[in-house]
Structures are given as structure tokens and as C-alpha cells.
Image 1 (tube, one colour):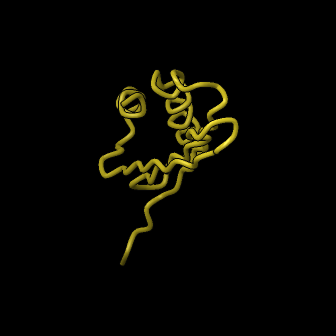
Image 2 (spheres, rainbow, N blue to C red):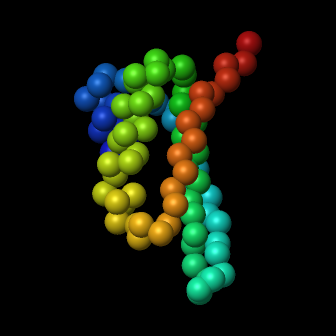
Image 3 (cartoon, one colour):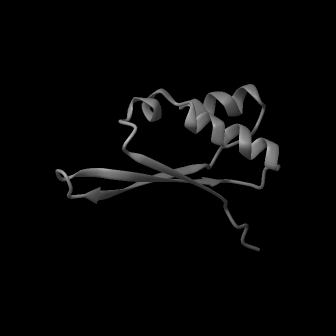
Length: 84
């Protein structure tokens, strides 16, 4: 959601963007989620500055900031390959 708001304010067309989230568990001291991997597949190539702006939106997301600090969140960004 935050990424969509930032994209709109920055006039970046992210239609077709996909986000997937995976979780890894730890068992010590108790079984819990130890980390998340967030994979953002952008529909097209954006400049380094534009990608940094979108990545910052993920990090500033209220949901992201609600997680316990011991839960690692890894963010991957990739561009969708165009098929010809």
C-alpha cells in the first residue's frame, strides 16, 4: 500500500507489479517466524533513484514497522523480463 502511494506521488506507473512474501521459521527459544522475504517484481525497469524511493516505501510501511525487531525482513526487487 505504501509503495502504491509513493509510486502515485512520484508518477511511477507500477501497474502489473507483483509482491510475494515468504517466511522462515526458527525453533529457539520458541517456534516463531524468524524472517520474511518480500519479493517485489516491478513491471518495468526503473532508475536506481526510483527503485530506492520504492524500497524506502517498503521500509517505512506501518506493517513493516509493527513487526518485532528480532524478525528480519529481506527485500528483493527485480524487474519483469519482457518477452518478445
